[in-house]
Length: 394
Image 1 (tube, rainbow, N blue to C red):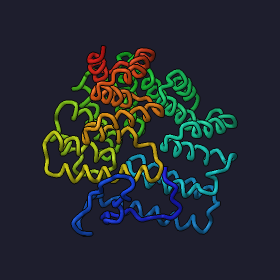
Image 2 (cartoon, one colour):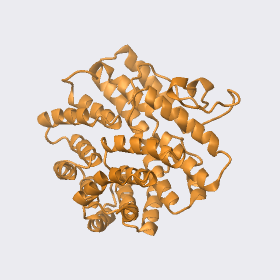
Image 3 (cartoon, one colour):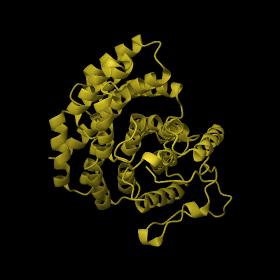
Image 4 (cartoon, rainbow, N blue to C red):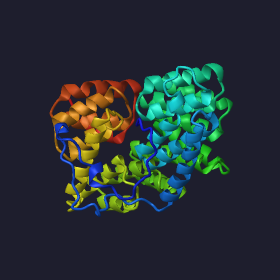
């Protein structure tokens, strides 16, 4: 995600110099009153984790071409980046893989990690190329099939995603395989059926690893929310949080449910002790907007600076968040629509469709909504919130 070649310690205090953006980007950074002002609070446990990883990084420096060490370190950073939502860890993982990053041919274990990082950068085509290389020589590589399934799903290519999910039957757990299949089916006209089927599978998977259960329960929660089963969705979210209360994706998805229900105070309570990734900070600001909280202006300025930094780095993976921020917090319908359309060209998940429809409605640009409406009809996506938006269009 980031091309970082030098290891940096994760700072608890963010200094002024980290958030000031050049004026030509037309950003208005939030400038703290002093260097002592704390912008982000991180759990104390992260210090221990980061220091341990830094020791592994120093070992790799002495032997940068050691594949085994590089894979182990990159894998650890990828897991930490996924759970915290902090893109710097993905940059550290890329740095560990730097000797192989631009090679057309690389060991399969390197290619899989490179594909995951490229996926997070939204460089989907190159990620799929890496995975296809792996599957040509290792047709039973479950991680490659699973990553491929996820990428196809994000792109809205549900037939291809389902095919990749079915390939998991050969060497992945039954819960992972069925979760993958149910997730795709829930987005492709079989939401109720897949929801009930996955519930039964999960009930029987008593001995499954916690992370496998977490994924399955999160899928149940999101499917229930799309079906308008908000009470069931909330119960699933709470069950998942009991497994991992710091998972960034999970916290964001649950926050969205709470925001849709007009429960901003619950969002504040939920996110008060979290690492404030761009996505979570955005949801905090949206909750503050509903509450007319005095901290809203500060968080809006910080988000402005962060999105400006993303542009400076040429990143595109935060377009969804930036479109949502621009539409609902900056109230700039025209710019939000441009961002949402650019995002739609890259990924097509329910929230991507929702943002484009919201921006089109806000700007009274019904023509911009047509490609999304056509796609929703073609894939038969069932979503309560999207249905309400479609009802507002001719």
